[in-house]
Length: 165
Image (tube, rainbow, N blue to C red; front, top):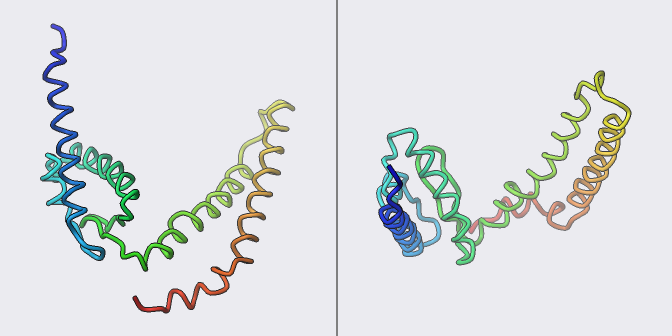
């Protein structure tokens, strides 16, 4: 019983077609539009109510989100509801929270994990590895937070957040 690749290719082709349709559907919408999971999953051919298909849908949507960046469309997931197309005026704040601040927090988390790692069964080389990584991580933390706090953006962040439109 071999696999019939012809049908698999047709399925993959249908999948690509569905992805293209959802991209076109999204691009036909304006900034500030809420896109609902039910509509998007239907276009992609997934039953949103089935857990396994939900995860496949979310995986495909991550690829779609990344693809749409080249068109200036940034989708923000709205838990359990769908995706919101950010307005251009909302993208800077989104990037700050989602990418810049989160990266700095990940350095902090790395320090927390490394500090609490059980070192009792490590040989000297592994202890040195942990020590070296703690040093690198601390430099990254210092650099990230200092760069952020010294930036013009950070000094004006409250003002930017209070702006309308």
